Amino acid sequence: MKLAWILWLSTHVLPQPAADSLCLSTTVYLEARDQSVRGQQAVAEVALRRRDSGLWGRNVCQVVTARKQFAPSIVSPQTRLSNPEAWAEAVTIALESERNWALPLAQRKLVVPGASHFAASAIASPSWRTAYEVATIGDHTFYKVQSLKPRRS
Image (cartoon, rainbow, N blue to C red; front, side, top):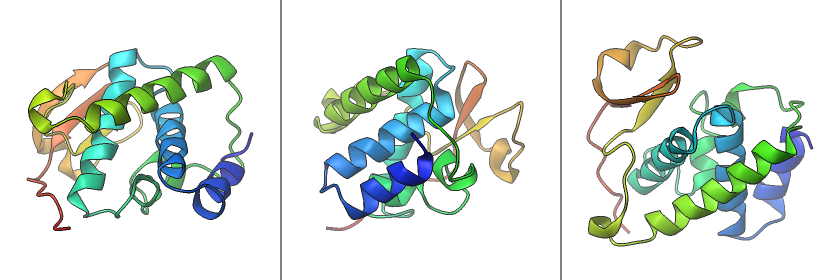
């Protein structure tokens, strides 16, 4: 399946929260399908933390498609998600991450506490890479770049 089709489905057809689950699954797949489960969970956690901040959008789909923030807005829309095993794992991890994130803050299991950004050192050298380093998992380094405050409802 092509990324363009997935993004169209999530923004024009599916209701919330199904759309967000699809967007999060797609992001985990594109960003971390070759990483450990923990690395994939960390990517999902960053996206969910950003959603809660409201700085990049009000839902996960807006966050992960914000200009040049996550793979869905960086790679070609013609990109095919062609590894069914990796896709199934990404969906499982995204759904588990959403369930974990729905818990009260004190009960959540955090993989990269406070991380708002990440970079794959082999392909990216962002200006904020000198921020506070939370963890390195696989070939991704997770950073706390700024204090994210939850948006007001």
